Length: 526
Image (cartoon, rainbow, N blue to C red; front, side):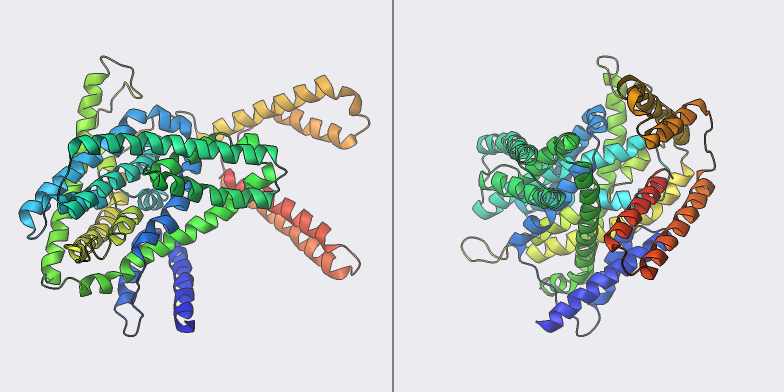
């Protein structure tokens, strides 16, 4: 027991180090983690990783999807709803069909039902991988919004296909009428359950005397309640978490205090950081168990099958991207689309087509395949499906992930949505906020200006900001100067705390937190 605990602690430390290394060398951390897990799996004496399949979805998916929903802009999601929905549902379905037909034709022992099962597993691109890669690249906001919105919904559609395929494999039959009704309930029921559970939590936050700590605990409980409730009612747990997360995120400023919002962001970022790290490391570490179960199929043969399916996935996504452009060109004559001025550069859609790295959801789905059927017989081709999934994730992460930055650098992406520089927009907003503050003070607190000199000083700061037309273009240097000043103030506070024995340290800590908030504000502006 102690040996296993030590091993997992070492893995967590290694994950942290590798992510720091990835930031240092400007490489997406999922790539390093997968390769590191793969390398570690070959070290003699390393314990074989085994996770109970039924726990995969419950442990990882609810918190990861919930956090993604909270950080997704509803405004951007609605703006790009047509292309997001088409890629999240139609393209996922077409991808699953293509994978099913190809695997059934070329891979011995893979029936059409097993092909659909494999298609449901590998069809959804992973937003974590794409986001980690695009973090180092300057690309238009529209691409980030579409990829983020697609990832929220394609997980649900792929897992619905996965579930139907599991039923077909287990029973040997597929009834379209029942499947259609079940699909409708899974989608609509999942959304409805998520919103209703979200409404319950919304009321709890608003009408009970919660603290910041309780608010954070409730945000952790919410996604699991949404997911489990929907799954128990045979609806989509993924859609439930996404819908509930979007519902609460949109209303966060109505029921969470500023303290709760600040702390929740920090805590959730840390939790999602380690969950993503563990999952990508598991992709590599799980290889020995997968290879061990291949039995009659050689590793080289199984690898070739994985290459075939990977090539099919890349091809289908690129074709779908260009097809979406053609459809948009036609539909703009009949409806108002988000971007009526279609890009003249036909290389541009290749960015979106090449951003189809697979990751967390594919791994979770593959590992959740049960070891046996209901009659006790081994699940057919389970380990071959697992190995192909592993190859798909590895190749898309390494090949597409490593070449995507180069592709972006070669294709000149024009941002037609945000014409003004970010710093200019930021300066305009700061001016307007200052005007609002001045108007409020002049209207409601004019008599208190003499009573509270600090209020008069703050009013002067706002008025100076409004009267100034300065835009800080070299923000990095401005930030460095202010950071150095804050560090000097921090040193003084720490020295004062150490030198004065009877000074309440909590007061010093409070001022240190205020300095930290000021520094965080500077970093957010960069």
